Image (tube, rainbow, N blue to C red; front, side, top):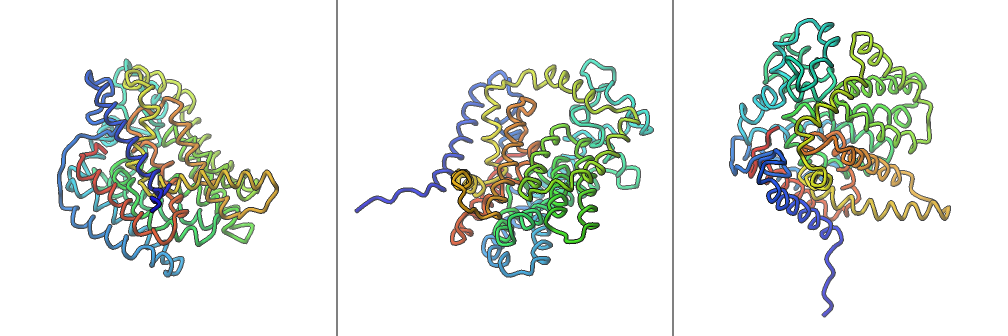
Length: 452
C-alpha cells in the first residue's frame, strides 16, 4: 500500500501553526527581562482562559456559517449576499467581543486601551490642537500625548473628538462606531473582488471574510475603523475602473476613493502603504484615468491639515524619534521581523494561509504563462494581484521596523486583503476550512485576554 502524501494545503496550515508556536517559545525565552514589553509574546495579550456572554453566540454563529455559508454564498442574489456578509461580520465581531463582557470586552478597550478617549479633555479648539500637535509628540515634551494619540496623525483623534461633540460621547458610542466601520470592510472587499476578479471568486471568498479571525481585534480597536476606511477606498477605486459604465459615476467613485485615501493619510502614518492596493487595482484594470480624480479627492485633506498647521512629514519624523526612544527602541528587530508575520496566523486564519500557498504556486504559473505569451485568466490574475498587494504592504511594514509587536491589530487594513486567497481552495473542502477559520478566532478569544 502506498502511503498518501499529506495535502500541501494542510502542510502549509500546520507549518503556520508551528511558526506561531516557535514565535511563542522564542518570545518566552527572550522575554525574561521583559525586553519585548509583552505579557504573552508574540500576542499583545495575557493568558486567561475564560468564557463569557458572547460564547454561545459565537459558537452558534460559527456553526451556522460553516454549515450554510457556502450554499448561501452561491445562491443568494448578489445584493443580498453583500448585506448578509456585512451583517454576519458585524454579528461575528460583536459575539467575539462579548466573550469578554460588554465593559471589559468592548467599551473599556477603546476608552482606556487605545487612549484616544482619555485625551479628549485635553483638547480644546481644533485649530490650536492641530498647530501644536507635533510639539506634544516627543516623550520629553511637556504634556506629551499618550502613545496612541502621538503614534497617529491627528485625524484619528479628531474622529473621536467629533463623535464626542455631536453628542456621541463615551466608550459605548466609540465602540459602536468602530464595530460598524470595521464590519463594513467585508462588503467593500467583496465588491472589489467582484469588480476585478469576478462574482464567482467573490462569492467563494464571502464566508471566509465573515468568519475572519481578525474580528477578535476589528471591533475593539480604532484600527478596525481604519481598516473599514481603507477597504472602501480600494473598493471605490475598483468601481471607478470596472464597476460603473457612466463616465460621471466613474469619476465620482474615483474622487470618493481619493477622499478616503486622503483621510487614511491622517488616520495612520503606516496606511500610506495602502497605495500598494490602489496600484494593484489600476494595474489589473490597466487604466490610469482615475488617477487625477483620486488626487483631486486627496488634495483637500493635505491642503486643509497643512493650512491648519499640521505638516504630515514633520509629524512622522518626530514620531520616529519618539518610537525609538520608547518601546520601539527596546523591542528587538531580530525577533519581531519574523514574529510579526507569525502572529498573523491568529488574524488571517488557517484557510487564508492555505489559500496563500495556492496563490504563490499559481502566481508563479501565471508569470511563466505571461513570459511564454500564453493566455491567462484575467480574473484569476486580479485576485492574485490583490492578495499579493496586501502581502507586499504587510512585508514593507514589517521590514520598516516601525511595527514591532501588536501587528495583529495594526496590520488589520492589510490582513483583510489576504483572506480572499481562501477562494482558491477547493469548494468541496469549504466547510472544513471555514471550521478551521472559526476555530482560530474562538480559541484565541477564549484562551487569551487580548488588550484591544
